Image 1: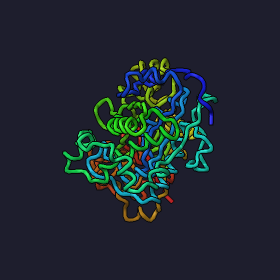
Image 2 (image 1 turned 90 degrees about the vertical axis):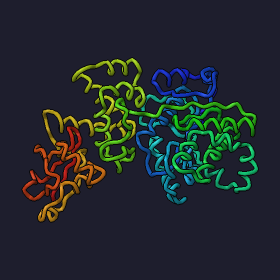
Image 3 (image 1 turned 135 degrees about the vertical axis):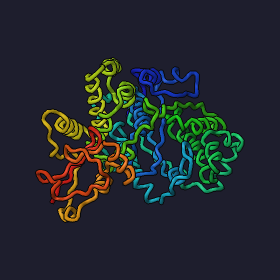
Image 4 (image 1 turned 180 degrees about the vertical axis):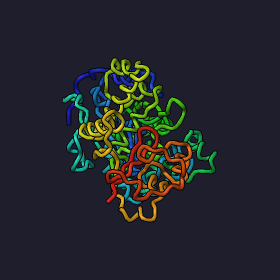
Length: 438
């Protein structure tokens, strides 16, 4: 592991502030803290086998932390994932088995490793970790630790937690937290979820005692959990801890970020193909381009400002840069190149939809004999999350079969709809799916 002996090359607080990546901070001296190397952590609960694009904000926070000369700890919540964070949720999460949580943890570690160089000695690291996709990571940047809180929480008994940790918590204080108040207003919260902030707070204390960690990063919805960890650290270990929250992303029109018409946009290429991922970013609204370039890429801010200032048709250049840079970080340069080239061909003068990067699947010819329902094929292709949403898209005039607009949601596809061996369905201007008929 790289020793942290030199002063940071740039102040992390300044870097994150310039990019709009700071929402709140707990310590008036936070900038001064960051003039010296620190160890900081951010947690990711493995509630699914993939992160989605909303998780890119805290990942970028950790990535900038490493680039500024600090040591990141990537904490996988193997134990807290069994409980479920109530923050930002109106109902309890689905309960997962230990095997599911362990499998999800390994998958998430591989995704985060695209952004952050992990220490090869990390005992929790999968054997097939990829190298960071960003080439500008300083060679002397401290390696990040990959830890799993199941390593210290799973061995503790209920009595251990009650006596060692629970005694330091005020129920009145816990009830004042927004994450708890929101659930109480929505109908109640289980004792299981109520205990989540106790576990997360103890994580901060453990990381301070065993790894010298003094800073926690998290999404804006984690403010209450971070504050509780700082207070617990002071009571249990007389620790001087701090926290920074990163903004929860919304689109300029106020709609939720990270959703497409087909549902969540995932980092896993099996859930969201690199081409679909590229198109999600390529379809960014004009008003969001500059902000997203600052949030989700490592481009210098001078270049971000230049691209964000483009107007008219020229703003499409900025959108293409955004899509390419984020796709390269998540899926690698080869996939980013393929997605960009396929998009240019599919929507440019040299229209070609037969490339491998265009989302596609094989459709058995037998399904066309009696007619295959258009809505069913749209849902199967991931162009819509449900038949009702597919119907809405057709009725709104946003669906084309090859180059023909479809107006009838009951339309059934037959052999007559096959051209050059395939059926092409397009939703809007940019979302394509090709069925190769065999």
